[in-house]
Image (tube, rainbow, N blue to C red):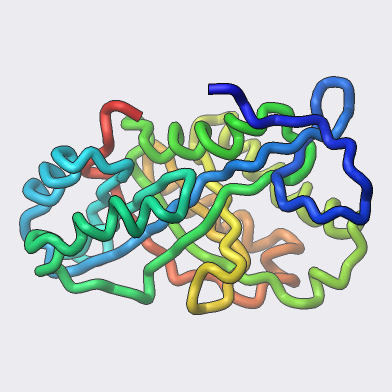
Length: 246
């Protein structure tokens, strides 16, 4: 399949909603695909083995988590490059009796899309492949998912001021990733949820403690301490089924 990556040469006054990056020559490139990811949480899940078998038979692009804070709870993460996937493929499975008998927890529903910051060179990997690799990696079964909303004050800062604040935040994330403690999945969720959040963050890793510690470290950054209006609710789980063919 030919990649739909192009070098950006359009006029500034033309509307372009594609994701942007930079190639090695420093030219702006664009990629008009992205990955959508949705987390649904349920309780009254007494037979997780049967749920996993149903997902495997259906061939869904999904991860099933045991909810650490609910002994009868599960989280179902599904993902695809088109939002139609959730309607055409995921919804029919959830309307089968096995899933229909579960009790949804809508307060933990999260839907987001991958995005770029503007400097990435391999757009297809960043937007499509890397997030899937991270959530389906069997050596990183633990996960913390949560939404967040920035305050309006952050949006009023200059681009330079925002960059400095985000670099502090990003530096912590890179340090934990390089040590193989925490790997993140960042999703934009503007207009995609009932709570008016801006982003969804997924933290995955070998153990739960480093995920918790990283959230604690982030509390001291300027972005979290000064410019976040809302954080959470949190879903904490461990993968009990992942697809083998991703």
